[in-house]
Amino acid sequence: MELTGKEMDFCTDTARKITDNVARAVVGKKECTRLLLCCLLCGGHALLQDVPGVGKTAAVNAFAASLDMDFRRIQCTPDMLPADILGFTVYDANTGKGSFCPGPIMSRLFLADEINRSSPKTQAALLEAMEEGRITVDGQDHILPQPFMVLATQNPIESVGTYPLPEAQLDRFAIRLSLGYPDEESELQILKDRRGNDPLEALQPVLDCDEIRRIQEEVRTVEIEDSLADYMMQVIRATRESNEIRLGASPRALLMLSRCAQSMAWLDSRMFVKPDDILALIQPLLAHRLVMTLESKHAGITPAMVLEEIVKKIRIPV
Image 1 (cartoon, rainbow, N blue to C red):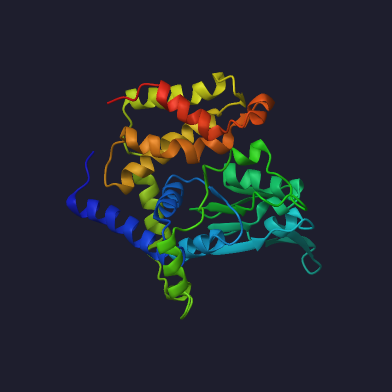
Image 2 (cartoon, rainbow, N blue to C red):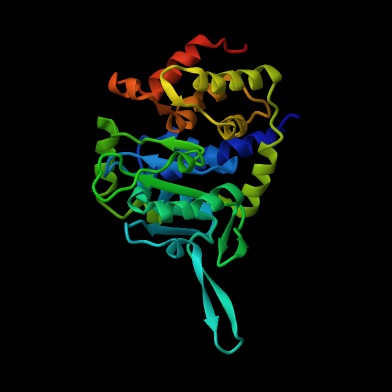
């Protein structure tokens, strides 16, 4: 299947407009925006992890403003309960029945800001929503609107009053991003842009829900050659066989790697995956899923270092 000239222009324009929108709020981080868009188009969820003040929440707000989707945000705290996210059932004395009062999770784009400040019980409330697209409250199932995406931020520096995300939770995030500090030119541009009005106020939506659903269906038809599918499987299996890693990537990681690669190809106006699509995703998609051995941690070996070695050892299809 090949894209027509008009369809190719739509792919290119969509990626450019959303990237430019977010760049107004977070200068110099276009690759991170591209990964967020890639995650949305394959039906995944994203975790933004970085030090305070680099623009994690601003990036999410700008990304949400670029999409005509119902956006809800909740600021996580240690005393927050699962009902604060999922909602609760209220008894109606007139009917003698309970009525469901939906929480902020019943949206299309949901931000859990500083997710590691919430308790493990509250964090676990997101598992069903992220994996199955539904929630259960008082024994009743409630289907989440589609498209649906969870975005979460966390600060890796602070430890007081925080609860590290368990491996089961991390595995449900398709990608983990780190914005990092801006370069000198970008930081000067941020200073100039903030002298006037907030750039977020001028952002206009680029895609609506119907267009996103159509693109998601189209992304699933992007072709992956058998040689590339085998390469992805070898990378995943290598993480399980490494002596430095105690817990390697799961089958869920393999499925998400293939879906994100399809999204990357679509954003480049292609209906077939190239090796570069996969290579660009290995670090943001796999690093947060790996659990290192104690010996590796003491030696200063990181998941990123192990993944670099794995990529060097496995032959890339051409």
